[in-house]
Image (cartoon, rainbow, N blue to C red; front, side, top):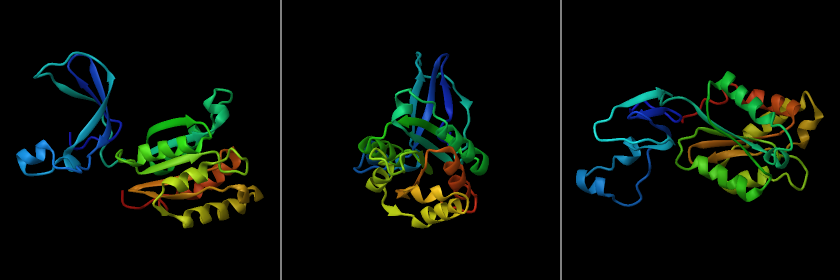
Length: 225
C-alpha cells in the first residue's frame, strides 16, 4: 500500500469501497501509537480514505486495489469560480479546459474539480481545505479575476497564501499580453501555502488558454512536491 497515491480506490470485502484522500498527518501531540511504539509513524505511513460504497467487512477480508494512482503522481485540484455556474444557470467550460491542459502538459491527476460561487470566504475555505493535509501539489482556480465587484478570487488567494510567486503572475500576463490587450484586465494572483502552489486564472476561454499555456510548461512546474 506504500505506493498508493491520492485517488486510488480500494475494495474491502465483497462490497465496501474506499478512495484514498490523504497521505500522512502531522501529529501535534504524542498519540497512543507513538507512546506504544516510540515512533511517530503517522506522518510517514498514515493513509486516510473516504467510504465511497458501504458494505460489511470482517477480520481477514481481502483488500483489493480497484484503481491505482501511483504515489509520485502530480496531484491537482481545479476550482471554477462562478456565481452562474454554481447555480446551474451556465455551463462550466473553464474548469474542464484547465483540467484538460493540466493533464496534457503536466500529466496531472485531477484529484477534484469543483464549482463554487464568487464568495471570498468560501473560496478561501476550499483553498485551505485542499492545501492543508491533502498532499495536493497544485490548485488552479478559473474565474473571478476581473474588475467586477463580485470578482474576489485574487483577494481570497491572498488571504491564504504564505509565500507569493509574482514571477508566475508577471510571466502569464506578459505572454498573454503579446496576443491580447485583455491580459491587463486579469488580476490573477499566485502563491504557495505549505507545499501547495495556488494559481488563479481568468474564466474567459481566450485569456484562460493563452495565460495557462506558459504556466503549464513542464520546466515552469518542475519544483519539489
